[in-house]
View 1: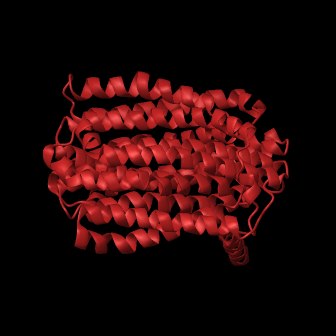
View 2 (view 1 turned 90 degrees about the vertical axis):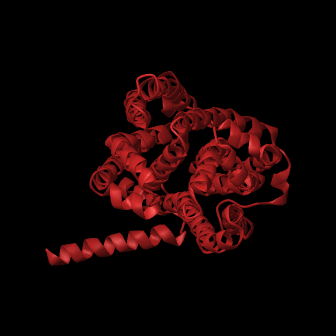
Length: 463
């Protein structure tokens, strides 16, 4: 028995080492459990680092004061629109690259990646100019008080002005994930976060809230430099070659066709979160700060589960490209089971330890009360979130971004927002109404995705 346990531990260690090494693997053959493991480990660690960005900022900014926290929270709520564009394009790039890799066509995969980068450069030019010019208006529109606008406009201006690094970090990591090289994507975020963690307290000490924005931008920029190094050195399955930078309108059209519904999908979700933040703003800066502290903590634990769902998306894309739809489906159910087990653990953690977790992030009594309520209520549906995000990302990995878009439109806008507003303000339940609406809507998304996934139309999508 002892020998068997030793062998199992050694096997897990070897898989873990392989997963982080950046070594290339064929995910269209062999053990599905091994494939999920090798892809999921770096993707989970990558998503942990993405969540650290949000947690680090709110942790250090919380020491400045609640107006600073509110300014960061409101900026991040609107910045979710930029994230949606980045994720939508990343989703398209990842799905198309995965198909080409599954077809064993590396040259076309590299050409596709370069066309995605050209699209991203055009998008971020507009976003940077608009966000920088209207930073104060953004905070006012989100319901920020005069103090929040004056305190936070510089933060908003810098963050939007550096949106190119946000877009590139998401996009290029999506490209690496689609190619099956999740290790590079992971290390880029570890490096980015390392710089952010080191710079944030130092620059906040000298420059206040402005320093937090500068630290975050430098951190992300460093991660992008690491990505570009691996794309240029010729050792990756995806390579940047000069001739690929000539616009290929056929690839661009195909990518935009997948990306625009993917972007709308996340815009629908992100815009609904903006509206939810606006509803919370009705109850004052304390409620905004408490809600946003809780959301950062929730995201910290959700993003590892998102990493598992990204592994499922890559496996779906590559196996469909290799003409193996049954293997693609089996990969999704394997990832969903692992995610459900993880989310049960997180739900229990929030049920019994939400107080100490929130106190570590922000010790203000009023903020803590709201944050603890948020964690305990929203985590009631965590097992549904874990399974649902795997199913939704499986559609996206197949290039079927339309189905999740329709699901999000109905569940967020036709259901979540009206319910949240009605029970929070007219019926007087307060912020708790928003929290209960979130649980119900996310559960509905999972049930709907499960039914549609079982029908199997996603297996026939061509990209």
